[in-house]
Image (cartoon, rainbow, N blue to C red; front, side, top):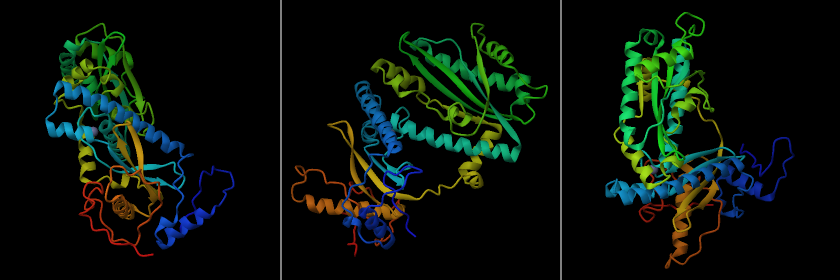
Length: 411
Ligand SMILES: [Zn+2]
């Protein structure tokens, strides 16, 4: 049975049914083209999703700043630069019934390391992977985790690259040559992070290390206090001015301060590196060609298993019922994400077909002069009668609408 749309209803409050709900529900059930459903998708109370979009809006603005810097500094080849400029111009989400949970279903990404849009996506993906791997290591190997953050005094721009190298060498020495650490470390993920101090104009590289340790670690003789960690870190860095090493137990949940969250966080905060062209240039060269994440031991092994698809038992399947499809275009002139299509989505492939149909109709309506046409109002559509194009086969509608055969859907 199709589910009931709960427009703006809150838990515990009675739901007011409207006629439009009946129509929509009917459309979902029977596949009647929901162009009958003329009421636009109401996102007013979709607070969670609004925040998601605010995030994208913010990151896209930062990216525009970055584009300017990159262009002035001529950092990327032409096609890479083009991809950067287009990155995140198109976003398509699936939304659940309550319009609270959104899943980014399709978008165009550039993959450039410092692109704020891509960095966010990448860190979410990494966080998920790390959480799965931690779960597997905990259950299959009987280990637990600690999170160690190694820092040192800030450095000026000219010393940043050397400082990063120094960190990496010191850390390698620490895990390979210091017996006390060797004894407890069953594998680690090491992640580099750099922040910029705007007031002092200097840089703060540091490394987060998520380490697998024995279940008995906190109780047995191998346990290392934070003073011990500090002692070792000072020694391998040959720097007695270092004041602290932060050590804590780590968890796999993707919440703040837990292991998976902390380690998958961005290598740099976009606020920092888009501070100015000069700062951006420093970040660019400091990170260029560098491996930001390294793994060893159990983490290395389990990352490989994850990539091979062997950790499926630890991957929680997303069983959300996604009811809506909504997509956005970035309007460069206004620096704003504008809604392009909203509709009902029975499942992913239907959603793709529905939007393609919408797009084809829009293009027909727009003939002969597309440039002066006002944007189409939101419509609710569904396309369950259409053949099922797979995600990979279906081209992005706006790229080649003419070449996409869109059969007419029959009422
Ligand atoms: Zn990007």
